[in-house]
Length: 293
Image (tube, rainbow, N blue to C red):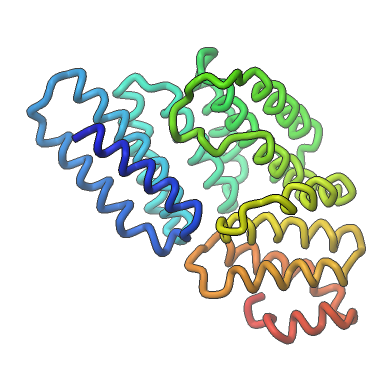
């Protein structure tokens, strides 16, 4: 049953690549509730119990991520906390650190910047020295993002450097399945996002343009999110026409998508373009989508 649960958890992760949180939150939370009830019922060996707790931790991470994307911020935090407890009880430090880092990212993106920064650093401490390189690279990326959101450019740059250096140590060894998406391309996108946040568009635009040129278009939510940072970077670089064209792609991709993340980014992009409303392309965009700002 635990093995079957792990298969279903990974299917949820893969579904999250192509579906938004509003589409997945119901099944994800039901799966988590069932797994927790299974553990409470008992009737298994200590070894199986640890495996089940570890699986609950993994399930909580993806369920928390999905709940956050669905705009259920408080529920997402509760789910992450449950997962942290389960992973720690299972002795799975890497999973626990991933959950702490996920909670950090959630806090950072919902305005609790200092808490997010503290938790991002705590995830590295939780992971310890033996965590897989891809996990540590991900945790450093979250630290970089938390520093960028608090306007700390130098620490953010250092954290990005640590993420890249750590990922370079990955030698193809088998990692936990929840790290499948962590690669050089994702680190490049985070680096570019940090530069956008720090108002360094000339560093961000080439990287985002190159990575997005080969990005899987079936991952519509992530594509919309990453294009939103490109649109902001173009506006910061005083390229309002191109920024408006990119923003239109964001808004078209996001239309009717049940994702709070894309909704927030759509608002941010439109707000950033408003100072350029005298430019025809921007004015047309605001006329078409201004009600979303």
